Image (cartoon, rainbow, N blue to C red; front, top):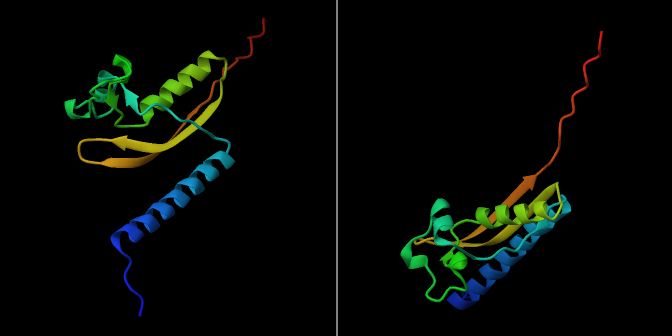
Length: 130
């Protein structure tokens, strides 16, 4: 009869399964034309509050800067900032995704988020003169 895995062995198996699942999702999204983004895990406290975080317990003791003083509660702020930076560089149609951890007082979660931005203009046909 087989023995039940020890806690360390079981957590190792779970970690490997999680890693394979994350890679499969990333490959699927990339195969659909999306580009993987890697954004900072730290944002400013005010921004963190807008996305459901900003608690004093999630503030860094020695932040790199005031703009990077809180642990991010969501991937959305980083992805929106990445889209804005790329738009400013002249990229108009963007499809980015990120797979990373977010942090709240109650949990550390693996999050997957995609953002698509399409730029287009509607041109109307000029009216004909009588």
